[in-house]
Length: 475
Image 1: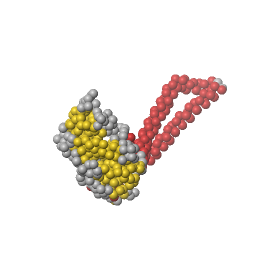
Image 2 (image 1 turned 90 degrees about the vertical axis):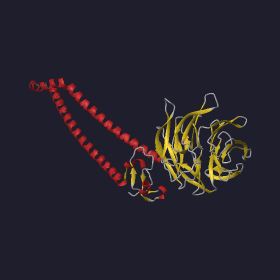
Image 3 (image 1 turned 45 degrees about the vertical axis):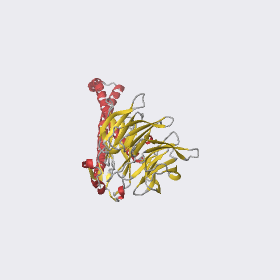
Image 4 (image 1 turned 135 degrees about the vertical axis):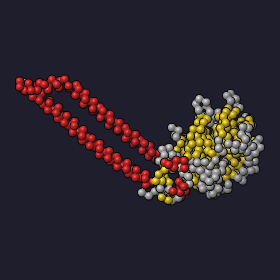
């Protein structure tokens, strides 16, 4: 059985398999895969495919041996119960004959057996009944073991059948793009360019048709977010400004308001579910909060970080947000009760990283810079502080470039994590297990993109291909 490795188009024979239960990397690989660092942290659990195949064949033989042994036990039981049944039938016939013709000599001969049977029949019945009960229980236990194995194998088959996959459906040559955003219905896409312009596209089934070009920013556009309750989006730029864009009746966008206050490049933007709070992070080391009144206005400046702020994420209840920066800190900020003010709640010392994402109120992920592990933090129920729970294996690369934030799609329980030259698509199961669904490799670390709100489309631009690439979800 020759299996060919398609990772990075190696086209080499698969030679190794990982036997670790909780491994999140591709279990099968060629020599080049493992030479590049796959399964580096548990190489002792990697073995040759030939050994694994021999184990499978040996296991099949052992099952055959067990079936044969079971048949031998069945035969022995049939013989034993057959003999017991025959002896009981003989005794029954003798008693029946005695009842037909009450012969004195026959009675004298059989009476001791009648007396002993009367005395021992309860014991005999109990012994037979108990042995049958024990045997039945043993058979049922064995069946349950086989059912459990069956469920495991079925689960593996189902996982394989339901494996999420995004397939390339469209490619368009374009200039350098730093950021994308979908509207809620995935009918519009906006893209922010290095040249400072923004393009608006109609988006239908993966096809992009340019509708408009906007030129209000004076420097490269680094981040974009669509509002979900109205036809508006916000953009952040190297020109230190945030612009709120709104669509007119003819669906053409115009600059409705410019938010100024940051003193250096803007790296990240998020907006809350009520769409009355914008949070922005900048190279000026500050996080600014903007609230919606008659117009948007600055409400608070947070100066907790001592380095460029790269990424911000807000929790499910919208009362905490996390940020990471060049100072190797994750800051957890919490909203005061009955107040619009936010204060620092927790500081976590970490390796340098530029991506994090809340999964819910109690769980968030953090990607150290170009590392092969993504870290999971969980909130302690007693202290309410976030603590490192575990590390998840992810694909990396030779280097990494930021401006592609992590994004979690709740409807698909799917996390999109750019790391190095790879996009890691990670399924989060109900039991909290993280499972690597797909890895998309670009052979280049300058990748920018996002995923639609319903998880149906991934859109990217990478420096290697200099293309917008659209991938569509399939099962």
